[in-house]
Length: 233
Image (cartoon, rainbow, N blue to C red):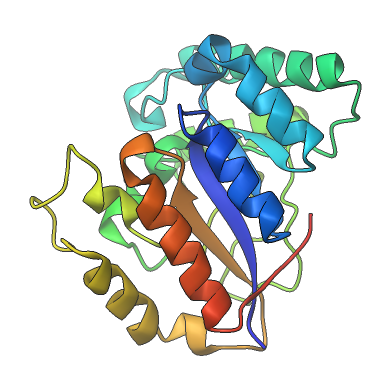
């Protein structure tokens, strides 16, 4: 049976409560990476997610590519989101299980938006090394176990092994990207060689965006139909 960690970027949205209920009904654990600006506007949705047992990670405050930011600006952005997450856990009176960070677009400071271009490997330069060291100093880790050898388990940020490309169907991108329909997304799942491997765990990347809520739920159900076991955090 294939095993996967479900990670969802861009929370909270106006459909987060519905997404949390969907996951709770199916007893599917997930790690929600929040945008600080959204959390600031809608803290109750994330408090409810915490109360339902979902884990919250940092997806930056402003969702700006790290490659376009100076290190200090990026650190300030990280800390803004951190303060909001810490406050949400404190209000829930629930201990935060760990500090987890995912770069917007998976631009780790080098200007490469690998969530979009499907880079085969993750490289580092001087700037990415500075940001990695900062994340390690802040106590950021990864919660994933039994990852494939090529996965960067030594990184301080959370990467992925498969991105669903669900964002290609949102209102901004639908019809303008290579994948245009749900059938396209499902075909990509079916043809991905990495997902056919059961020896190691997978990290799935989807998005909490209101205009693709139905599609995201359908994709999660599709993975379940393919007998994926969603791993707990």
